[in-house]
Image (spheres, rainbow, N blue to C red):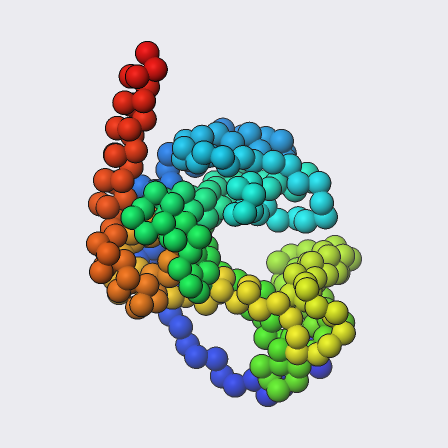
Length: 303
């Protein structure tokens, strides 16, 4: 392992994990936001079709018109939200435990879909698609909500994709291609498996699968041969998770606005835009009440 890892990495900057009080505060705010869509059936394991049904019911609770949950028969292994097609895609072989399912609902529907829907309903409709460079805040809030539901933060989210990208671009001065990054990741996942109690054979088998999937994700859109070239979007998971926890610690009142649309709560320019336009949680509630009143009026006319 030591022969594969970079030798000249500098000492990382120390970043404190959120305190128990901050996690509790985030958990209370998260439950207020997503509790109505995370009440899933009391069973141990969910198959793909069952996950689809739960997601469909949650979308209905969100009143996310035009959105649907579908089974994805491609080779993808992760549940994902397609903003363009307005679809939540569940891989056909995906299986989830109840706690993980609740966390993913908070991540995918309670954040990605909700911020899209609410943004389109706000007085600044571009919030539905997202202000520039909103992704850091988007994934930061989504991953924070997963952690808040679990009630613990043992590590900031997104370590492994951030590690893989760092290896590829050569933060240690040594850019790498697909093959070299894969070889490091395989050893990393094997060690992680062994430390987690897996037998040597099982640890190696799962390490090969995890390393391959991570390397494919890191180098998607490239020829995989050129060193130092990869898809860097996934750095936003870890960096976003860090800055969002900082926001909750330093400006907890901002949590009330996390769902108004796709913006980065750690971006001062985004905050200036929302404050200047008077876009707040109360503004969103007002717009939703207007929409509800209009729907009721239409229903009365149809009687």
